[in-house]
Each structure stands twice: as structure tokens, then as C-alpha cells.
Image (cartoon, rainbow, N blue to C red):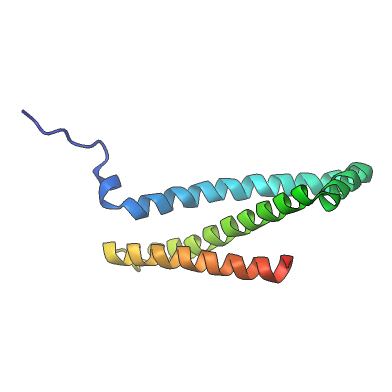
Length: 128
């Protein structure tokens, strides 16, 4: 009898690496969609300022909406920091640096740590 072999053995070898790679792509999509919403909001503010005033007054007068807006902002900052830090890591890979298994895992942990630290710093600096 033949052994049942996995379809993608690299997914089992590089468990952390493939998760971080998928997260990099996912965060890129989230940033793209967030910038679309932000640019739509800027266009809407010029075309119809009354609607923007109503939306802003809703978020400013409701505690649940205010906290949800802060949570969305924190998540978006975290996504931005992760995508930025992992992009720097990809630049080093393009230069041929840090391509061994141990270096890839170590830089992955460093990227996640720096992402969390920088997002907390940005959040506390801008939104506290």
C-alpha cells in the first residue's frame, strides 16, 4: 500500500511562514478596501456635507459606536503596521538576506512583535 501523501508538503514544513504570507496578502486587501472607504468618505464630504455631519454626530454621540469606531481604528492600525513590517521583511528577502528556515521563523516573530508594539504606540499617540 502506498502512503497517503499531503498535497502541499511545504505547508507542513513552514507552518508559521505560510500563515504570515497569507496574512500579508490579507492585510493588503484590507488596506486597499479601507483606503477605498476613506477616499469615498472624502469625496462624500465635499459633495454632501450634511450626510457626513449626521454620520459624525452618530459616532460622537453614541458610546457603542464610539468604542466600535476606536476598535476598527485600532484593527486598521494593526493591519497597517503588520503589512508595513512584513513588507520590509520581503525587501530583505528580495536582497537575498534571511532566507534560511531559522531566519524566516525568527523574522516572522520579530515582525509580529514589532507590529503589535508599533500599533499600540500609534494608537496611544493618535487616539488617546
